[in-house]
Figure 1 (cartoon, rainbow, N blue to C red):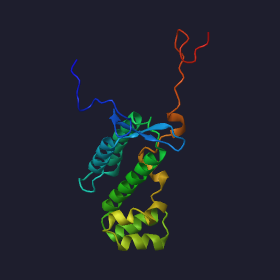
Figure 2: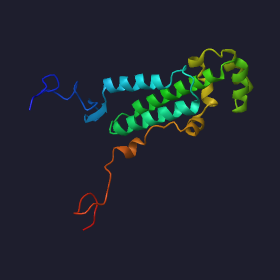
Figure 3: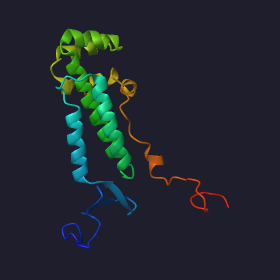
Figure 4: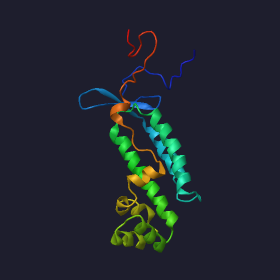
Length: 183
């Protein structure tokens, strides 16, 4: 067996990463898991590729590709004990998806009509439509009230996992008295 000196060390867990996780100290002094910096940067890079505003894809195609990737990533990193990270990443992804929708509407008139059809107040729709080429800025504040979480759910873009249940052990019934089987 050949040992990789660069990956092996006898040292504190802080500042090290293992299988995409690194560790941090919580308020109570307990050591907790988090997503390491490198996989987090890779996640953001991949989401940026999937949510480019150019590329000629429909919202359904973008949402499906994003859904597949995000579900796999969240399934792997569900053991991370950083609920704020998942929430912030989800908000950032929703912001990007809203920017794509604005880009798809292209013109101010189209944006205005589409926003009114989705139930926006005329003043908010007008304000967004006037700045129709400022996709990132417009996709942040005013658009949240129109392209809501319900709209995201209709596109089937995954939400943050239930962090309370993801860190609990899974109880299964297996022969031999293992993990919850009755004897």
